[in-house]
Length: 294
Ligand code: ADP
View: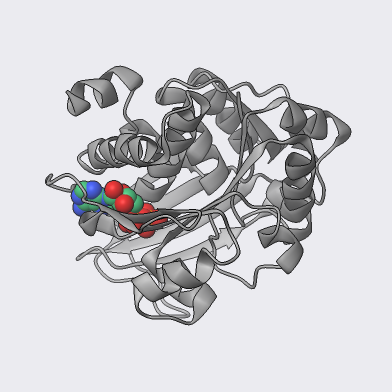
């Protein structure tokens, strides 16, 4: 089983020719509400990739909260430990300009209320094979979950996003770090991603640096650095490519696939997701991933 202790947001996406300046009002072209949050995205990706998944986190007592719960449950994610707390759900307010540039305001809402894993969360974490963590919940809560997982022998996978200083006690409890090239550079101060990977593997047993359309570098223990090429596809929307990669990677690890095979499985899943618009809706099913690997 995989548990995900993380964020769930409603993304409020407005499409405009040019984003308004302060004090200005503009008319947009279109608007969508899309379930998101890195935690929820990874949970849905893992469930669609065939894993049993439990989501640990919180939504608000507003209509977004009900919808987010419904979306996770509909994807087959166990929401028994998804709490409803007073106040608004987390949201990401996203303005997309013509040409694709965007600006984003994240208001954590209920995610900010998750200041520690509950006793019930800790029970699920200790029974899981893999725990997926990101940094959209308060870092003390993420650290506490990681340490509890480590103590229970649950494999801890961390996506260090949004980038922020990583407490040593968090990194010490991480088994697998999956960073995109920008995150790897920000954490290490090394612009060269091979150097960044070398530095990170000094602290974490298995490090993966994802490189968008150039694939991923993976290094386990003191083994060689392996470059897994991305699949050559026409990308339509790369939103949540990294979250799809992590969810599928975790699903493969629960099945005890070797690290390099797990990275190939994750690469195939991510390539499928970028060929379709949307985040959670673009994540491939297990049958689609298996088919693409034939
Ligand atoms: P993030 O979404 O976190 O920024 P990346 O952009 O590095 O992460 O993408 C994660 C993975 O998704 C890559 O390692 C790759 O396997 C896959 N991917 C991303 N963009 C493409 C693309 N244009 N074509 C094929 N695969 C892609």
